[in-house]
Image (tube, rainbow, N blue to C red; front, side, top):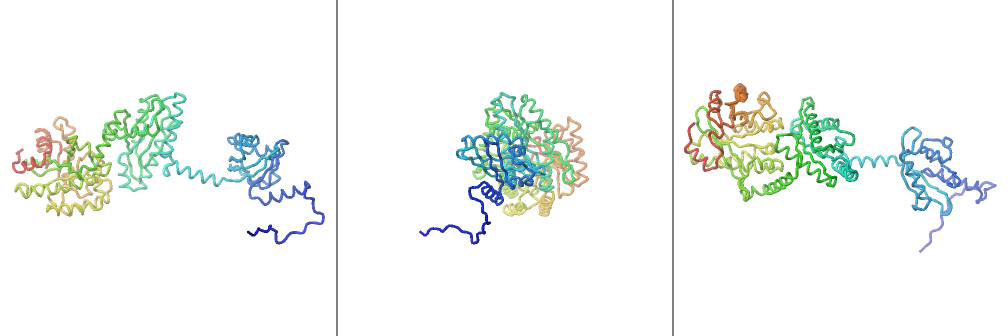
Length: 585
Protein backbone atom coordinates (compact mmCIF):
# COMPACT_ATOMS: atom_id res chain seq x y z
CA UNK A 1 0.00 0.00 0.00
CA UNK A 2 1.34 3.41 -0.98
CA UNK A 3 1.80 5.74 1.97
CA UNK A 4 0.06 9.13 1.90
CA UNK A 5 2.62 11.96 1.61
CA UNK A 6 2.45 14.67 4.27
CA UNK A 7 0.32 17.73 3.45
CA UNK A 8 2.32 20.80 2.44
CA UNK A 9 0.59 24.07 1.48
CA UNK A 10 1.32 25.14 -2.09
CA UNK A 11 2.59 28.53 -0.94
CA UNK A 12 4.25 29.11 2.41
CA UNK A 13 4.56 32.74 3.53
CA UNK A 14 8.14 33.86 4.03
CA UNK A 15 8.73 34.34 7.77
CA UNK A 16 9.84 37.73 8.97
CA UNK A 17 13.53 38.27 9.35
CA UNK A 18 13.39 37.91 13.11
CA UNK A 19 11.04 34.93 13.51
CA UNK A 20 9.80 34.15 17.03
CA UNK A 21 11.23 31.06 18.73
CA UNK A 22 8.63 28.23 18.62
CA UNK A 23 8.86 27.77 22.36
CA UNK A 24 8.38 31.41 23.27
CA UNK A 25 5.25 32.68 25.03
CA UNK A 26 4.61 35.25 22.31
CA UNK A 27 4.77 32.57 19.64
CA UNK A 28 2.32 30.33 21.51
CA UNK A 29 -0.02 33.28 22.09
CA UNK A 30 0.14 34.11 18.39
CA UNK A 31 -0.81 30.55 17.43
CA UNK A 32 -3.68 30.57 19.95
CA UNK A 33 -5.04 33.84 18.58
CA UNK A 34 -4.86 32.45 15.03
CA UNK A 35 -6.73 29.32 16.14
CA UNK A 36 -9.39 31.39 17.90
CA UNK A 37 -9.85 33.65 14.89
CA UNK A 38 -10.46 30.67 12.59
CA UNK A 39 -12.92 28.85 14.87
CA UNK A 40 -16.67 29.14 14.31
CA UNK A 41 -17.36 28.29 17.96
CA UNK A 42 -16.39 30.39 20.94
CA UNK A 43 -13.27 29.02 22.63
CA UNK A 44 -12.08 29.33 26.19
CA UNK A 45 -9.40 28.05 28.55
CA UNK A 46 -9.36 28.32 32.29
CA UNK A 47 -6.54 27.94 34.78
CA UNK A 48 -8.74 26.99 37.68
CA UNK A 49 -5.96 26.99 40.27
CA UNK A 50 -5.05 30.60 39.49
CA UNK A 51 -8.60 31.62 38.50
CA UNK A 52 -7.31 32.84 35.13
CA UNK A 53 -9.84 32.63 32.29
CA UNK A 54 -9.31 33.50 28.63
CA UNK A 55 -12.23 33.99 26.25
CA UNK A 56 -11.94 34.12 22.49
CA UNK A 57 -13.41 37.03 20.52
CA UNK A 58 -15.90 34.58 19.00
CA UNK A 59 -17.02 33.56 22.51
CA UNK A 60 -17.87 37.21 23.21
CA UNK A 61 -19.47 37.87 19.80
CA UNK A 62 -21.87 34.95 20.31
CA UNK A 63 -23.40 37.09 23.06
CA UNK A 64 -23.30 40.27 20.96
CA UNK A 65 -20.19 41.84 22.51
CA UNK A 66 -16.96 43.22 21.05
CA UNK A 67 -13.68 41.81 22.41
CA UNK A 68 -13.06 44.76 24.73
CA UNK A 69 -16.58 44.74 26.19
CA UNK A 70 -16.15 41.55 28.23
CA UNK A 71 -13.18 41.01 30.54
CA UNK A 72 -11.49 37.62 30.75
CA UNK A 73 -12.74 36.75 34.21
CA UNK A 74 -14.88 33.76 35.39
CA UNK A 75 -17.49 36.06 36.92
CA UNK A 76 -18.07 37.65 33.49
CA UNK A 77 -19.13 34.23 32.27
CA UNK A 78 -21.13 33.02 35.24
CA UNK A 79 -23.08 36.23 35.89
CA UNK A 80 -24.56 35.92 32.39
CA UNK A 81 -25.79 32.33 32.95
CA UNK A 82 -29.52 31.96 33.66
CA UNK A 83 -30.06 31.67 37.44
CA UNK A 84 -31.96 28.40 37.01
CA UNK A 85 -29.08 26.88 35.01
CA UNK A 86 -26.07 28.16 37.00
CA UNK A 87 -25.97 25.46 39.68
CA UNK A 88 -26.13 22.68 37.08
CA UNK A 89 -23.24 24.26 35.12
CA UNK A 90 -21.10 24.50 38.27
CA UNK A 91 -21.91 20.86 39.19
CA UNK A 92 -20.92 19.71 35.69
CA UNK A 93 -17.56 21.57 35.87
CA UNK A 94 -16.85 20.27 39.36
CA UNK A 95 -17.69 16.67 38.35
CA UNK A 96 -15.29 16.82 35.41
CA UNK A 97 -12.45 18.44 37.33
CA UNK A 98 -12.73 15.80 40.06
CA UNK A 99 -12.79 12.88 37.64
CA UNK A 100 -16.47 11.97 38.09
CA UNK A 101 -17.13 12.52 34.37
CA UNK A 102 -14.88 11.86 31.40
CA UNK A 103 -15.72 15.10 29.64
CA UNK A 104 -17.57 18.33 30.21
CA UNK A 105 -20.72 18.68 28.12
CA UNK A 106 -23.73 20.64 29.26
CA UNK A 107 -26.41 23.04 27.99
CA UNK A 108 -27.54 26.25 29.65
CA UNK A 109 -28.99 29.66 28.85
CA UNK A 110 -26.91 32.86 28.67
CA UNK A 111 -28.00 36.47 28.50
CA UNK A 112 -27.32 38.14 25.14
CA UNK A 113 -26.48 41.83 24.91
CA UNK A 114 -29.90 42.45 23.31
CA UNK A 115 -31.64 41.09 26.42
CA UNK A 116 -32.65 37.71 24.98
CA UNK A 117 -31.67 34.33 26.38
CA UNK A 118 -29.57 32.11 24.13
CA UNK A 119 -29.15 28.37 24.57
CA UNK A 120 -25.45 27.44 24.74
CA UNK A 121 -23.83 24.03 24.34
CA UNK A 122 -20.56 23.96 26.29
CA UNK A 123 -17.92 21.26 25.80
CA UNK A 124 -14.59 21.02 27.63
CA UNK A 125 -11.68 18.79 28.62
CA UNK A 126 -9.41 18.98 31.66
CA UNK A 127 -5.63 18.64 31.64
CA UNK A 128 -4.52 15.21 32.76
CA UNK A 129 -2.29 16.47 35.61
CA UNK A 130 -3.19 20.11 36.23
CA UNK A 131 -6.34 22.06 37.14
CA UNK A 132 -6.69 23.34 33.62
CA UNK A 133 -9.82 23.33 31.49
CA UNK A 134 -10.28 24.23 27.82
CA UNK A 135 -13.23 23.96 25.51
CA UNK A 136 -15.83 25.59 23.28
CA UNK A 137 -19.31 27.11 23.38
CA UNK A 138 -21.88 26.85 20.55
CA UNK A 139 -25.13 28.78 20.14
CA UNK A 140 -27.83 26.08 19.81
CA UNK A 141 -30.85 28.36 20.27
CA UNK A 142 -32.34 27.53 16.86
CA UNK A 143 -31.87 23.79 17.45
CA UNK A 144 -33.47 24.12 20.88
CA UNK A 145 -36.42 25.97 19.36
CA UNK A 146 -36.86 23.18 16.81
CA UNK A 147 -36.70 20.58 19.60
CA UNK A 148 -39.27 22.53 21.61
CA UNK A 149 -41.57 22.70 18.59
CA UNK A 150 -41.31 18.94 18.11
CA UNK A 151 -42.09 18.42 21.79
CA UNK A 152 -44.96 20.88 21.59
CA UNK A 153 -46.48 19.02 18.65
CA UNK A 154 -45.89 15.65 20.29
CA UNK A 155 -47.58 16.56 23.57
CA UNK A 156 -50.13 19.25 22.68
CA UNK A 157 -53.27 19.49 20.61
CA UNK A 158 -52.46 21.66 17.56
CA UNK A 159 -55.88 23.37 17.47
CA UNK A 160 -56.34 24.42 21.11
CA UNK A 161 -52.77 24.20 22.41
CA UNK A 162 -54.04 22.04 25.28
CA UNK A 163 -52.20 18.93 26.50
CA UNK A 164 -53.04 15.91 24.36
CA UNK A 165 -53.85 12.46 25.70
CA UNK A 166 -50.16 11.55 26.09
CA UNK A 167 -49.29 14.62 28.16
CA UNK A 168 -52.56 14.47 30.12
CA UNK A 169 -51.83 10.90 31.20
CA UNK A 170 -48.27 11.90 32.12
CA UNK A 171 -49.54 14.68 34.39
CA UNK A 172 -52.12 12.31 35.84
CA UNK A 173 -49.33 9.82 36.56
CA UNK A 174 -47.28 12.48 38.39
CA UNK A 175 -50.33 13.58 40.39
CA UNK A 176 -50.99 9.97 41.45
CA UNK A 177 -47.34 9.60 42.50
CA UNK A 178 -47.60 12.71 44.71
CA UNK A 179 -50.80 11.31 46.18
CA UNK A 180 -48.99 8.10 47.17
CA UNK A 181 -45.99 9.90 48.66
CA UNK A 182 -47.76 12.63 50.60
CA UNK A 183 -51.16 11.09 51.37
CA UNK A 184 -52.63 14.23 49.82
CA UNK A 185 -56.27 14.88 48.95
CA UNK A 186 -57.89 12.59 46.36
CA UNK A 187 -57.72 13.69 42.76
CA UNK A 188 -60.52 13.49 40.21
CA UNK A 189 -60.66 12.99 36.46
CA UNK A 190 -63.60 14.39 34.52
CA UNK A 191 -64.10 13.22 30.93
CA UNK A 192 -66.29 15.38 28.67
CA UNK A 193 -67.89 14.31 25.40
CA UNK A 194 -69.70 17.13 23.61
CA UNK A 195 -73.25 16.36 22.54
CA UNK A 196 -74.24 16.74 18.86
CA UNK A 197 -70.89 18.30 17.89
CA UNK A 198 -71.13 16.68 14.46
CA UNK A 199 -74.25 18.77 13.84
CA UNK A 200 -72.14 21.95 13.90
CA UNK A 201 -69.52 20.40 11.62
CA UNK A 202 -72.11 19.12 9.18
CA UNK A 203 -74.31 22.21 9.05
CA UNK A 204 -71.79 25.08 9.50
CA UNK A 205 -68.56 23.49 8.31
CA UNK A 206 -65.34 22.17 9.83
CA UNK A 207 -63.94 25.66 10.46
CA UNK A 208 -66.99 26.53 12.53
CA UNK A 209 -66.53 23.29 14.46
CA UNK A 210 -62.92 24.25 15.18
CA UNK A 211 -64.05 27.70 16.35
CA UNK A 212 -66.54 26.04 18.70
CA UNK A 213 -63.83 23.82 20.20
CA UNK A 214 -61.56 26.82 20.81
CA UNK A 215 -64.41 28.74 22.46
CA UNK A 216 -65.23 25.78 24.69
CA UNK A 217 -61.56 25.48 25.63
CA UNK A 218 -61.72 29.10 26.82
CA UNK A 219 -64.87 28.46 28.87
CA UNK A 220 -63.39 25.41 30.57
CA UNK A 221 -60.02 27.03 31.23
CA UNK A 222 -61.74 29.81 33.23
CA UNK A 223 -62.85 27.23 35.80
CA UNK A 224 -59.46 25.63 36.45
CA UNK A 225 -57.69 26.06 39.75
CA UNK A 226 -53.93 26.32 40.19
CA UNK A 227 -52.48 22.87 39.54
CA UNK A 228 -55.45 21.53 37.54
CA UNK A 229 -55.01 20.33 33.94
CA UNK A 230 -57.38 20.60 30.99
CA UNK A 231 -56.63 18.42 27.96
CA UNK A 232 -58.18 17.75 24.59
CA UNK A 233 -58.05 14.01 24.05
CA UNK A 234 -59.24 14.05 20.44
CA UNK A 235 -62.24 15.19 18.42
CA UNK A 236 -64.89 16.67 20.71
CA UNK A 237 -63.52 15.04 23.85
CA UNK A 238 -61.89 16.94 26.73
CA UNK A 239 -60.61 15.83 30.13
CA UNK A 240 -59.97 17.72 33.37
CA UNK A 241 -57.59 16.64 36.12
CA UNK A 242 -58.58 18.12 39.47
CA UNK A 243 -55.38 17.80 41.50
CA UNK A 244 -56.89 17.62 44.97
CA UNK A 245 -60.62 17.47 45.80
CA UNK A 246 -62.45 17.13 49.06
CA UNK A 247 -64.43 14.16 47.78
CA UNK A 248 -67.19 13.20 45.34
CA UNK A 249 -69.38 16.16 46.25
CA UNK A 250 -66.68 18.70 45.30
CA UNK A 251 -65.98 16.89 42.01
CA UNK A 252 -69.69 16.89 41.16
CA UNK A 253 -69.94 20.57 42.06
CA UNK A 254 -67.14 21.25 39.57
CA UNK A 255 -69.05 19.21 36.97
CA UNK A 256 -72.09 21.42 37.65
CA UNK A 257 -69.91 24.47 36.94
CA UNK A 258 -68.75 22.91 33.66
CA UNK A 259 -72.35 22.29 32.59
CA UNK A 260 -73.32 25.85 33.46
CA UNK A 261 -70.35 27.29 31.54
CA UNK A 262 -71.26 25.32 28.43
CA UNK A 263 -74.92 26.40 28.61
CA UNK A 264 -74.08 30.03 27.94
CA UNK A 265 -74.72 30.77 24.24
CA UNK A 266 -71.82 30.90 21.80
CA UNK A 267 -71.76 32.81 18.54
CA UNK A 268 -70.23 30.64 15.81
CA UNK A 269 -70.24 31.63 12.13
CA UNK A 270 -72.69 34.41 12.98
CA UNK A 271 -75.18 32.04 14.60
CA UNK A 272 -76.03 31.48 18.26
CA UNK A 273 -75.04 27.95 19.29
CA UNK A 274 -75.70 26.16 22.57
CA UNK A 275 -73.26 23.48 23.68
CA UNK A 276 -73.71 20.64 26.14
CA UNK A 277 -71.69 17.63 27.18
CA UNK A 278 -71.96 14.25 28.86
CA UNK A 279 -69.44 14.03 31.71
CA UNK A 280 -67.95 11.07 33.55
CA UNK A 281 -66.20 11.48 36.93
CA UNK A 282 -63.64 9.09 38.46
CA UNK A 283 -61.88 9.63 41.80
CA UNK A 284 -58.62 8.12 43.03
CA UNK A 285 -58.74 6.36 46.37
CA UNK A 286 -55.13 5.93 47.45
CA UNK A 287 -53.12 7.01 44.40
CA UNK A 288 -52.29 3.40 43.50
CA UNK A 289 -54.52 3.47 40.43
CA UNK A 290 -52.90 3.41 37.01
CA UNK A 291 -53.55 6.63 35.09
CA UNK A 292 -55.00 4.76 32.11
CA UNK A 293 -57.42 2.90 34.40
CA UNK A 294 -58.63 6.08 36.09
CA UNK A 295 -59.21 7.69 32.70
CA UNK A 296 -61.02 4.57 31.49
CA UNK A 297 -63.30 4.70 34.53
CA UNK A 298 -64.17 8.32 33.75
CA UNK A 299 -64.97 7.35 30.15
CA UNK A 300 -67.18 4.51 31.38
CA UNK A 301 -69.08 6.93 33.63
CA UNK A 302 -69.45 9.35 30.71
CA UNK A 303 -71.06 6.65 28.59
CA UNK A 304 -73.50 5.94 31.41
CA UNK A 305 -74.41 9.65 31.57
CA UNK A 306 -74.94 9.74 27.81
CA UNK A 307 -77.06 6.61 27.80
CA UNK A 308 -79.14 7.55 30.84
CA UNK A 309 -79.73 11.17 29.88
CA UNK A 310 -81.28 12.01 33.27
CA UNK A 311 -78.28 14.08 34.39
CA UNK A 312 -75.38 15.48 32.36
CA UNK A 313 -72.77 13.72 34.54
CA UNK A 314 -72.25 10.43 36.37
CA UNK A 315 -69.84 9.39 39.13
CA UNK A 316 -68.06 6.11 38.41
CA UNK A 317 -68.77 3.05 40.51
CA UNK A 318 -67.32 -0.46 39.98
CA UNK A 319 -70.67 -1.87 38.82
CA UNK A 320 -70.27 0.24 35.69
CA UNK A 321 -67.30 -1.88 34.67
CA UNK A 322 -69.48 -4.97 34.70
CA UNK A 323 -72.04 -3.15 32.60
CA UNK A 324 -69.31 -1.95 30.24
CA UNK A 325 -68.03 -5.51 29.76
CA UNK A 326 -71.57 -6.66 29.06
CA UNK A 327 -71.93 -3.85 26.53
CA UNK A 328 -68.68 -4.87 24.81
CA UNK A 329 -69.97 -8.43 24.54
CA UNK A 330 -73.25 -7.14 23.14
CA UNK A 331 -71.32 -5.08 20.60
CA UNK A 332 -69.34 -8.17 19.54
CA UNK A 333 -72.56 -10.17 19.18
CA UNK A 334 -74.13 -7.35 17.18
CA UNK A 335 -71.44 -7.64 14.50
CA UNK A 336 -72.66 -11.16 13.68
CA UNK A 337 -76.39 -10.74 14.28
CA UNK A 338 -77.32 -9.72 10.72
CA UNK A 339 -75.42 -12.54 9.01
CA UNK A 340 -76.92 -15.02 11.49
CA UNK A 341 -80.45 -13.82 10.82
CA UNK A 342 -81.14 -12.83 14.43
CA UNK A 343 -83.10 -9.66 13.63
CA UNK A 344 -86.81 -9.54 12.95
CA UNK A 345 -89.41 -6.86 12.44
CA UNK A 346 -92.46 -6.05 14.50
CA UNK A 347 -95.17 -3.78 13.17
CA UNK A 348 -97.27 -1.22 15.02
CA UNK A 349 -100.55 -0.24 13.34
CA UNK A 350 -101.11 3.40 12.34
CA UNK A 351 -104.80 4.38 12.42
CA UNK A 352 -106.70 7.02 10.47
CA UNK A 353 -108.35 8.67 13.48
CA UNK A 354 -111.42 10.08 11.73
CA UNK A 355 -112.55 6.70 10.38
CA UNK A 356 -110.74 4.28 12.67
CA UNK A 357 -109.40 2.41 9.62
CA UNK A 358 -105.93 0.92 9.30
CA UNK A 359 -103.68 3.35 7.43
CA UNK A 360 -100.43 1.41 7.65
CA UNK A 361 -97.71 0.08 9.92
CA UNK A 362 -94.49 1.34 11.39
CA UNK A 363 -91.72 -1.26 11.07
CA UNK A 364 -89.72 -1.65 14.30
CA UNK A 365 -86.61 -3.82 14.50
CA UNK A 366 -86.15 -6.43 17.23
CA UNK A 367 -83.14 -8.60 18.11
CA UNK A 368 -83.78 -12.23 19.00
CA UNK A 369 -80.48 -13.02 20.71
CA UNK A 370 -79.66 -16.76 20.81
CA UNK A 371 -78.91 -16.76 24.58
CA UNK A 372 -80.32 -13.51 25.97
CA UNK A 373 -83.69 -13.71 24.29
CA UNK A 374 -85.46 -10.66 22.90
CA UNK A 375 -83.32 -7.52 23.34
CA UNK A 376 -85.04 -4.15 23.43
CA UNK A 377 -84.11 -1.65 20.70
CA UNK A 378 -83.05 0.99 23.22
CA UNK A 379 -80.33 -1.46 24.35
CA UNK A 380 -78.78 -2.18 20.96
CA UNK A 381 -79.70 0.72 18.64
CA UNK A 382 -77.34 3.21 20.41
CA UNK A 383 -74.52 0.65 20.12
CA UNK A 384 -75.31 0.14 16.44
CA UNK A 385 -75.21 3.91 15.88
CA UNK A 386 -71.88 4.37 17.69
CA UNK A 387 -70.19 1.47 15.88
CA UNK A 388 -71.59 2.26 12.42
CA UNK A 389 -73.51 -1.03 12.32
CA UNK A 390 -76.71 1.00 12.05
CA UNK A 391 -76.01 1.42 8.33
CA UNK A 392 -76.18 -2.30 7.36
CA UNK A 393 -78.95 -2.84 9.92
CA UNK A 394 -80.94 0.04 8.45
CA UNK A 395 -80.48 -1.38 4.95
CA UNK A 396 -81.79 -4.76 6.12
CA UNK A 397 -84.83 -3.15 7.78
CA UNK A 398 -85.61 -1.25 4.57
CA UNK A 399 -85.31 -4.36 2.38
CA UNK A 400 -87.35 -6.55 4.72
CA UNK A 401 -90.08 -3.91 5.16
CA UNK A 402 -90.52 -3.52 1.39
CA UNK A 403 -90.57 -7.29 0.92
CA UNK A 404 -93.15 -7.76 3.69
CA UNK A 405 -95.42 -5.00 2.38
CA UNK A 406 -95.31 -6.48 -1.12
CA UNK A 407 -96.29 -9.87 0.31
CA UNK A 408 -99.26 -8.36 2.17
CA UNK A 409 -100.46 -6.50 -0.89
CA UNK A 410 -100.35 -9.73 -2.89
CA UNK A 411 -102.29 -11.63 -0.21
CA UNK A 412 -104.91 -9.10 0.95
CA UNK A 413 -107.16 -6.77 -0.97
CA UNK A 414 -107.42 -4.65 2.18
CA UNK A 415 -103.66 -3.95 2.02
CA UNK A 416 -103.96 -2.16 -1.32
CA UNK A 417 -104.00 1.35 0.20
CA UNK A 418 -101.87 0.93 3.30
CA UNK A 419 -98.21 1.91 3.62
CA UNK A 420 -95.26 0.93 5.76
CA UNK A 421 -93.09 3.44 7.62
CA UNK A 422 -89.35 2.85 8.07
CA UNK A 423 -86.96 4.90 10.22
CA UNK A 424 -83.81 6.32 8.61
CA UNK A 425 -80.73 6.89 10.78
CA UNK A 426 -78.21 9.72 10.55
CA UNK A 427 -75.61 7.27 9.19
CA UNK A 428 -77.92 6.29 6.34
CA UNK A 429 -78.43 9.96 5.47
CA UNK A 430 -74.66 10.38 5.22
CA UNK A 431 -74.60 7.74 2.47
CA UNK A 432 -74.53 9.57 -0.90
CA UNK A 433 -76.06 6.49 -2.55
CA UNK A 434 -79.09 6.45 -0.21
CA UNK A 435 -81.64 7.38 -2.91
CA UNK A 436 -80.28 4.73 -5.28
CA UNK A 437 -80.41 2.15 -2.50
CA UNK A 438 -84.06 2.91 -1.75
CA UNK A 439 -84.96 2.78 -5.44
CA UNK A 440 -83.26 -0.63 -5.65
CA UNK A 441 -85.22 -1.90 -2.62
CA UNK A 442 -88.52 -0.81 -4.17
CA UNK A 443 -87.69 -2.36 -7.53
CA UNK A 444 -86.51 -5.64 -5.97
CA UNK A 445 -89.70 -5.92 -3.92
CA UNK A 446 -91.93 -4.69 -6.76
CA UNK A 447 -93.37 -2.04 -4.42
CA UNK A 448 -94.72 1.33 -5.51
CA UNK A 449 -93.03 4.35 -3.86
CA UNK A 450 -96.32 5.63 -2.40
CA UNK A 451 -96.48 2.49 -0.25
CA UNK A 452 -93.31 3.50 1.59
CA UNK A 453 -93.08 6.19 4.28
CA UNK A 454 -89.68 7.28 5.58
CA UNK A 455 -89.30 8.65 9.10
CA UNK A 456 -86.35 10.68 10.40
CA UNK A 457 -85.72 12.76 13.52
CA UNK A 458 -85.43 16.54 13.54
CA UNK A 459 -81.73 16.42 14.38
CA UNK A 460 -81.01 14.13 11.41
CA UNK A 461 -82.76 16.48 9.00
CA UNK A 462 -81.12 19.61 10.40
CA UNK A 463 -77.59 18.16 10.63
CA UNK A 464 -76.55 18.61 6.99
CA UNK A 465 -79.11 21.13 5.81
CA UNK A 466 -78.12 21.58 2.18
CA UNK A 467 -77.28 17.94 1.45
CA UNK A 468 -80.31 16.59 3.32
CA UNK A 469 -82.68 18.98 1.57
CA UNK A 470 -81.47 17.64 -1.78
CA UNK A 471 -81.83 14.01 -0.62
CA UNK A 472 -85.31 14.64 0.73
CA UNK A 473 -86.39 16.32 -2.48
CA UNK A 474 -85.14 13.39 -4.55
CA UNK A 475 -87.09 10.96 -2.34
CA UNK A 476 -90.19 13.13 -2.49
CA UNK A 477 -89.93 13.27 -6.30
CA UNK A 478 -90.11 9.46 -6.32
CA UNK A 479 -93.49 9.65 -4.56
CA UNK A 480 -92.27 8.53 -1.13
CA UNK A 481 -93.93 10.12 1.89
CA UNK A 482 -91.58 11.87 4.34
CA UNK A 483 -92.22 12.22 8.09
CA UNK A 484 -90.42 13.93 10.98
CA UNK A 485 -90.36 11.55 13.92
CA UNK A 486 -90.52 12.50 17.63
CA UNK A 487 -91.36 16.10 16.78
CA UNK A 488 -90.82 18.52 19.66
CA UNK A 489 -87.76 16.78 21.12
CA UNK A 490 -85.16 18.10 18.63
CA UNK A 491 -83.73 21.47 17.73
CA UNK A 492 -85.81 22.69 14.81
CA UNK A 493 -89.07 24.54 14.50
CA UNK A 494 -91.98 24.36 12.12
CA UNK A 495 -90.77 27.61 10.62
CA UNK A 496 -87.41 26.08 9.70
CA UNK A 497 -88.91 22.78 8.61
CA UNK A 498 -91.08 24.45 6.00
CA UNK A 499 -88.02 24.70 3.77
CA UNK A 500 -87.88 20.90 3.58
CA UNK A 501 -90.16 18.79 1.34
CA UNK A 502 -92.06 17.04 4.16
CA UNK A 503 -95.50 15.46 4.39
CA UNK A 504 -96.13 14.74 8.06
CA UNK A 505 -95.04 15.33 11.62
CA UNK A 506 -95.19 12.69 14.34
CA UNK A 507 -95.86 14.30 17.72
CA UNK A 508 -93.62 12.68 20.31
CA UNK A 509 -95.37 10.34 22.73
CA UNK A 510 -94.22 12.41 25.72
CA UNK A 511 -96.71 15.13 24.72
CA UNK A 512 -99.59 12.72 24.01
CA UNK A 513 -99.42 10.29 26.94
CA UNK A 514 -101.46 11.70 29.81
CA UNK A 515 -102.65 14.73 27.84
CA UNK A 516 -106.16 14.19 29.21
CA UNK A 517 -104.78 14.95 32.68
CA UNK A 518 -102.37 17.77 31.86
CA UNK A 519 -103.64 20.91 30.18
CA UNK A 520 -100.09 21.89 29.20
CA UNK A 521 -99.62 18.77 27.09
CA UNK A 522 -102.98 19.19 25.38
CA UNK A 523 -102.10 22.81 24.58
CA UNK A 524 -98.80 21.78 23.01
CA UNK A 525 -100.56 19.22 20.82
CA UNK A 526 -103.20 21.80 19.85
CA UNK A 527 -100.48 24.31 18.88
CA UNK A 528 -98.54 21.79 16.79
CA UNK A 529 -101.69 20.74 14.98
CA UNK A 530 -102.62 24.36 14.19
CA UNK A 531 -99.16 25.22 12.87
CA UNK A 532 -98.92 21.98 10.89
CA UNK A 533 -102.26 22.73 9.28
CA UNK A 534 -101.03 26.20 8.30
CA UNK A 535 -98.01 24.60 6.63
CA UNK A 536 -100.19 21.91 4.99
CA UNK A 537 -98.55 19.07 6.91
CA UNK A 538 -100.41 16.07 8.30
CA UNK A 539 -99.85 14.95 11.88
CA UNK A 540 -99.42 11.50 13.42
CA UNK A 541 -99.82 11.36 17.21
CA UNK A 542 -97.70 8.71 18.93
CA UNK A 543 -98.34 7.25 22.38
CA UNK A 544 -102.16 7.04 22.33
CA UNK A 545 -103.01 4.84 25.31
CA UNK A 546 -106.50 5.84 26.42
CA UNK A 547 -109.91 6.45 24.88
CA UNK A 548 -109.86 9.94 26.43
CA UNK A 549 -106.68 11.00 24.62
CA UNK A 550 -108.07 9.53 21.40
CA UNK A 551 -111.23 11.60 21.82
CA UNK A 552 -109.22 14.79 22.33
CA UNK A 553 -107.13 14.12 19.22
CA UNK A 554 -110.25 13.48 17.16
CA UNK A 555 -111.77 16.74 18.40
CA UNK A 556 -108.56 18.50 17.32
CA UNK A 557 -108.83 16.81 13.90
CA UNK A 558 -105.49 15.01 14.13
CA UNK A 559 -105.23 12.83 11.02
CA UNK A 560 -103.40 9.71 12.26
CA UNK A 561 -102.32 8.05 15.49
CA UNK A 562 -100.63 4.99 16.93
CA UNK A 563 -100.12 3.63 20.41
CA UNK A 564 -100.94 0.83 22.79
CA UNK A 565 -104.62 1.79 22.84
CA UNK A 566 -104.77 0.34 19.34
CA UNK A 567 -102.00 -2.24 19.55
CA UNK A 568 -98.47 -2.89 20.72
CA UNK A 569 -95.98 -3.71 17.96
CA UNK A 570 -96.74 -7.24 16.73
CA UNK A 571 -94.98 -9.84 14.62
CA UNK A 572 -95.67 -10.41 10.94
CA UNK A 573 -98.40 -13.02 11.45
CA UNK A 574 -100.34 -10.82 13.89
CA UNK A 575 -99.98 -7.84 11.54
CA UNK A 576 -101.40 -9.98 8.69
CA UNK A 577 -104.38 -10.84 10.92
CA UNK A 578 -104.89 -7.10 11.47
CA UNK A 579 -105.05 -6.52 7.75
CA UNK A 580 -107.44 -9.39 7.17
CA UNK A 581 -109.75 -8.60 10.10
CA UNK A 582 -109.01 -5.06 11.32
CA UNK A 583 -110.62 -4.03 14.66
CA UNK A 584 -112.83 -0.97 14.64
CA UNK A 585 -112.13 2.11 16.77
